[in-house]
Length: 267
Image (cartoon, rainbow, N blue to C red; front, side, top):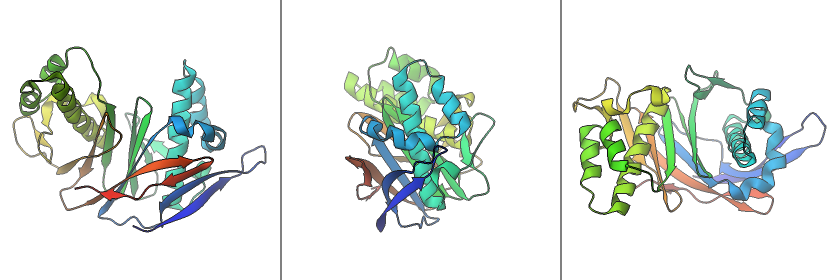
């Protein structure tokens, strides 16, 4: 996938031009492709003043309501970066990207076949972008949490719980639990229902989604694990079962510049 470096420029109300340099694909996202971008947010703090003008009025108001400054900063950074990414695909200034929201708050683009989803966990953000199909993405830090086996029994389908319960070591159990959890979260996010959709009613232990009884769902969904930062699990759920090329790219930072490392197709 060819790349070129593009400066996303926007002139805010005060009249000062800000820019955020981002290396992105050269404008063509083919129907059979899914582009995944991921990044730690901490190195992006130096870009805060550049990204802040891109937020809409409702996003800025939400950012101001966070109780803890770090949470507000992370929200600003991941939403600002989302707008830069979408703006590059739409050939639109980041501040002019218009988002709408589903019944349960899933952001989407109006009047565009570009589909996307995003997630963040413990300061690591991930974005998935494709065309013409619903998509969901989730990332979670693999961490200690109380009663993971019990949580799996309560919220996982039988086949998923069997994978967790079979783990003999705690580290293996944690990894398997979050491997399953991100796949389930990605699916309900693709549906636009979030945790309103009961997690125990479907099974993601294979490369596709099926009901907890083992039947195929009425709409086919494919599942993909995504390699990101060490200590994190991430997954994609994509509408349809036709072959796709999933390309994963980490955003790297060099002083005042945002650059993209070369993508790695999913194995």
